[in-house]
Image (cartoon, rainbow, N blue to C red; front, side, top):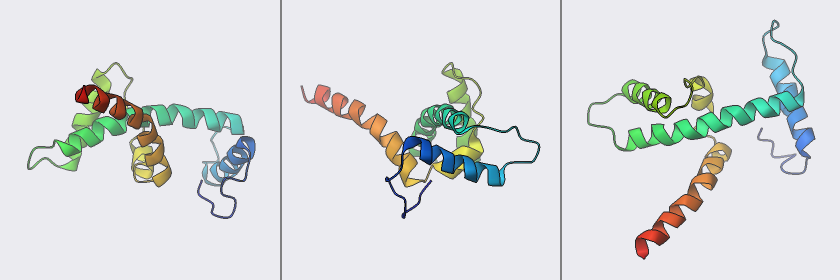
Length: 125
């Protein structure tokens, strides 16, 4: 959640309780009741899958052949994701919401950055 007023001045539990409150506003009436801890764990599972998928997707976007549509790239990326031993990618809508979010991008880049530095050091030697 992006809230300029609260910012980082909140505990982890308080943050996830706020996320749960927003979730409860938008959930379907037939949806199960969740605790803030369940919402946190679910987001963690989604994030893990999204980080794997976004790497594949962005690589396909960078190396796409001329004339390839975004739908083609989506299909190919999902196939590649599934062939890496991962279960079927089921978070396309979540990907569309989060892929341009500055906070989500920072999470992805934070994990990728150490590997890039390590590779760069190896190349220089």
